[in-house]
Length: 250
Image (tube, rainbow, N blue to C red; front, side, top):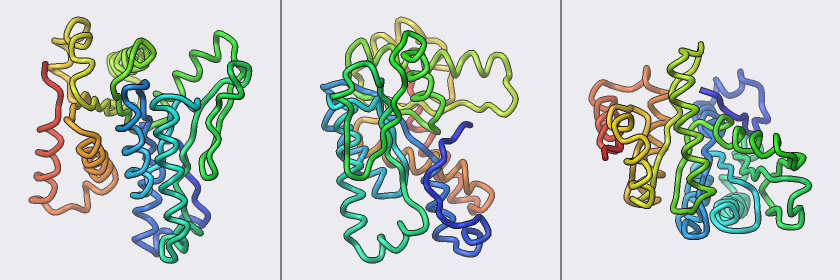
């Protein structure tokens, strides 16, 4: 699974000798894309804030509107608070989440979100850059969360599902399904019409009722990916059952 690197300011040996920093470095590198439109603003803000506070790196489409803006605003606010706390500030000196927006340099550059603690990646703005931007949102993440939204959001998650399906079908070496998490039932109709039977057999499409539940699911997915071998049997089974309970079935 492709992971976008966060900011780690110490060599790996240092992290190995500090279990707390090691765990936070694993979370920083478990980047989460937040996809959604204007109607997903509130959930995006909550996701950006809560995930960043727990040291996950988030990314959005990068513009100063809708869920793209709200997710980065939440992350920016979280990092501001973290840097004002003495204990967390010490940790941030070694490793820090990197919330990021991916935008277009030649398309509404004045509308690119600019936060005090967030980063912007600007692509050119040609037709191919549109596809590259979408590809980065999907591939340069460890999990994708889909909120309420319109046509743009539908294009994003349909491309995401298609990407997962094709990569798995072709048995690309080193590829594992990237979790796709839907918050609420806003997209159930289109999912049922286009992919119903496939989703009902899938093991990577999830659904939560709230943004808070989505945060908890991200935490569980990251734990299973990075610490499964270290977990006791009963804890491992509890986490796997939590994961199974959120698989989307239509």
